[in-house]
Length: 70
Image (cartoon, rainbow, N blue to C red; front, top):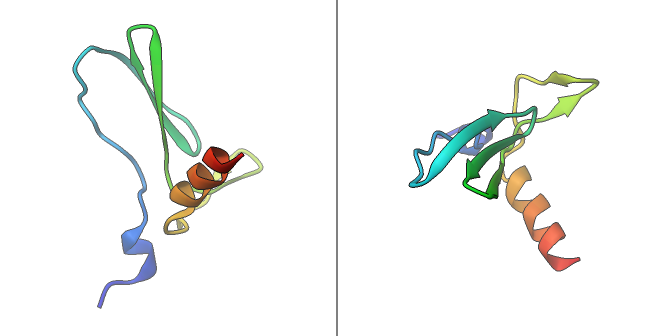
């Protein structure tokens, strides 16, 4: 049986064509592709500039869907 946190996206590790830089923030991974940025919203949680040890599964997906709606 898988625990809910095992479904969480803690980090991304892409090697993308044209990638010139990578930055891992508190809750997002940002890839620079020439003049464009690709942001991957993870399920990491940050509070008071501290990344908490247990992510929330599907948090990044829900935040992206809310942003796309508005």
